[in-house]
Image (tube, rainbow, N blue to C red; front, side):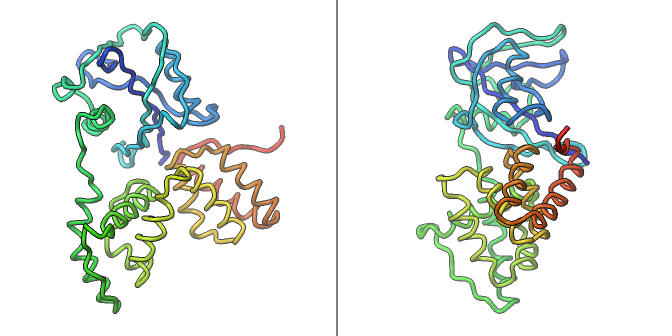
Length: 294
């Protein structure tokens, strides 16, 4: 099944947020549109999508708010949310499409996706959304301890005041997003089966410390890992990290250029093997596979 990537923006005016709906009794949505193969990157795609509504608002990584994973049939839709600052223009929509400006306090009574609503309210500083990863961790801590003990490891008691729990939560969030938002990615049996006695170290240090450091954005880190695994010839974990790069907003073109860098520094045999993995993941998601010279 192909994975859809949708781009949406919070467009505000005089303390009100713009919403649109395509059917009179349908859900209200933020203005936006799909991320298409011809878009050079998600930010350029967001700019083009807003132009379809008559709005000019240059978007870049500084305007990115967060990525949501919304149920979509049997899979999910990757929903990249931006804040459109300094926009201009007049709202134009297709015939039959409704528009409205809503105060954030009115959104709870508006028919719209609950996850998107919460993200907007959080971005506006009105609501602090519960952290589902933290809730999951509290529910699973006892199970994780049991699994660790079953493989001969006794975990240290976690004290929220020491910062250990924060590292664990950050690590779980990164790992879950790399795996496409699947809760099973951070299930104790999954962690124990994949990492064994190294589970705590991998989640806390690799994902909670290194991956979560804000000095590099997640997409950059994903592309770095794709390059390193490609050079090393580790095609097994490469499948996961190519998918993770897409989940973090990387484009097929960016992955293709990463493979070219593998060829430069790791050799063409490594790059050819890596490209086979990248092409397979893109095909599985229904994304266009960049071609060679025309």
